[in-house]
Length: 122
Image (cartoon, rainbow, N blue to C red; front, side, top):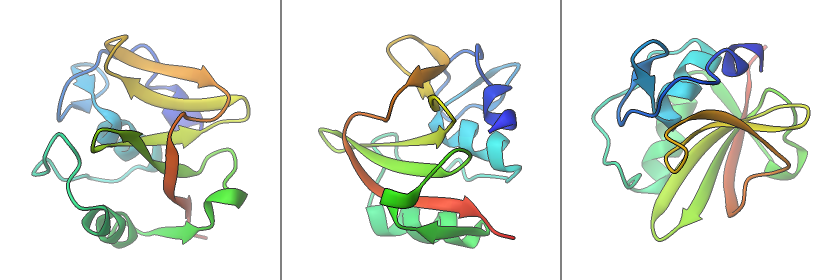
């Protein structure tokens, strides 16, 4: 959660992987969990099954979305075929907001259907 909050204020950048140059939602997840993340994915998200496998291979443990809490990662169906990653906090979630063009912490839970959730192993 602290690493995700460290991304707040970074500008939005498609396929962005560096806080100084910009992040997308995958980049925020990579920074938050200290993982190298792929850059070869479609901007609309692609098949959910592929994303679930990639996150599992990154060493996160899938959990029931109903029990996800602060510091956990959510995969959200934001509508119109757009998938989005967000890191839960104690008051909301950190994510790369394309509309605001930056990484922000938004109060509450993400709008849209939560497709899957993960926690750090260990």
